[in-house]
Length: 351
Image (cartoon, rainbow, N blue to C red; front, side, top):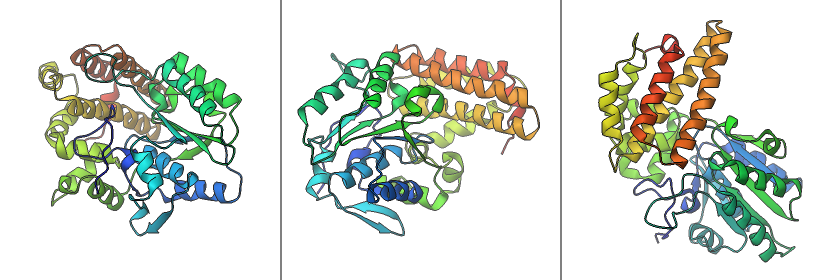
């Protein structure tokens, strides 16, 4: 029986959100680390789930929550699975479990769409939740997804809760970019690293999420997805192969090609192309990260540090642009300009 869920800001058409996804693929090491902590009675009150976007961090947060709230997991060659008919699983999937709160970007007060940030008002909901669910015999769980989207006031409010957590409370904090999180928050969490998915696990996770999205020949899809299920689905479903085949050569050219990039930006800034636009942003920021790694390999450590700082700054700028609903075309063109200003193209190795 299909579970009906409320919409969330990062939904992809036809794909169940993490709260309703009953499988966790390719992250056995993280799952085993959490299970070991739980079974030995040394469960930390705050867990930082860190790694690339789209590799299963939010899915893991909900999987861990199901375990703490009494659901059973089964392991197979294709990962960890839960029974979607289990009452705990169904309550979590429909935001109806009294022991779990999911903090993410809220819907706009008026009109359609979602806010660009997690605000302090959202984090303050946690205090009310903890006060209303004071049962000492069960866990109270908060998922912040992702913490990258918190504004400064929200981050400070979360920090206060982490400093003096209520009893039998567990926080799962999803984090894509380490530079977006306060060091004081990181220091109060147990760290769990999530790696990019291997090809077999990537395709398995894709089939679990949306069976018809996997093409017969998935070679190019696997290569371009870089181990991210979300990115793989964007590529398969939103014209991603064409976008990347056009965009990637522009990032290794000797000089910026503004006419071609302007055309791409015009297309991706149109209404309804949000997922494709997101893919292009990820492709450029990912290329900056790769350029930094390649610079280290070539011994250009000062350039590697410059590119690493660029990556952090651009990630922050993009989040702020989303929060203030800035012109997407200009955001994309500015990112492309900064890419070339720092000479990142010199450290991109064409496939």
